Length: 316
Ligand SMILES: Cc1cc2nc3c(=O)[nH]c(=O)nc-3n(C[C@H](O)[C@H](O)[C@H](O)COP(=O)(O)OP(=O)(O)OC[C@H]3O[C@@H](n4cnc5c(N)ncnc54)[C@H](O)[C@@H]3O)c2cc1C
Image (cartoon, helix red, strand yellow):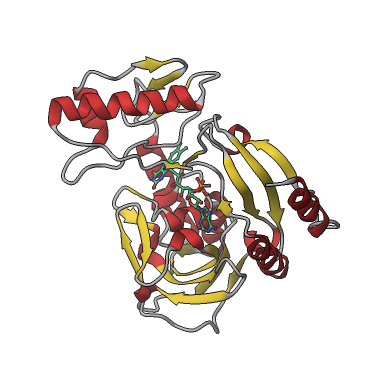
């Protein structure tokens, strides 16, 4: 990004709630607490601003990437050459959308329209207050709605895609595209569209159908699920959750542990002694430490079991 483009970007967002930041260390925006630099980063608060901004980026031929809570990303030391966008304000809201177009999911309860930037924790807490059930399995996942849909995040037998009714997406020129659930191909930690690259699109809003239940029942299920996580996963350390996808019919953590790698370190990145599929940053671990450890784990597991582990973390 040249100086003229930087000046243009700074000018474009004048008067927005937050200023454009340049040469931003993505370590501050990743739960792994490591990351290369992004050329620019901006928080966008409204659909109108986002559409306008995307049009300008398109004209300048600048690339962008939306992130949520950074709980599944690692930006390499090469850095990101364009603008990192975070969705705030209007994109953090939750509303009942009774009149929205019904999709192919059996209508069990009210339809909810949730901003892509809304945190899963806030969404779940809101659902509990409203007596709306169906997403309790997301308890303890520290992401945003957009990030969770993009990754088809899930736990303990449930996936966010199970309750999805439709998506409101924006393309790289700010055009709004509404996609019913039936056009989405959802598989293990993956959401795809038949005719478009989801990586080039922004999940502005997601619509869900939940079912009514009592607050007590929902709270009790959330507490039970949280208890299941406790003790099995490292707590209070920097990580991106499960680092590798589970290979078909097996668990990445089981293979890594059986390869004798629990507690193994590269610099200050360590295979968690609590759960072998968590790579944790024990202090000032760098991107290189994490990637070296990732490759070491992949090589050792391949040598021992002829299984190539694929990262679940999005390496940018
Ligand atoms: C302690 C811990 C536990 C975890 N447990 C689980 C678990 O049980 N199950 C599970 O599935 N995951 C788990 N994760 C991983 C992670 O929390 C999820 O994948 C989460 O859904 C990612 O959301 P995010 O907002 O942080 O996305 P980010 O990490 O910010 O982004 C992830 C990807 O989504 C894209 N993206 C983000 N927002 C948007 C948007 N609005 N539009 C388009 N693309 C977007 C990004 O470009 C990137 O490609 C865990 C992580 C941690 C740290």
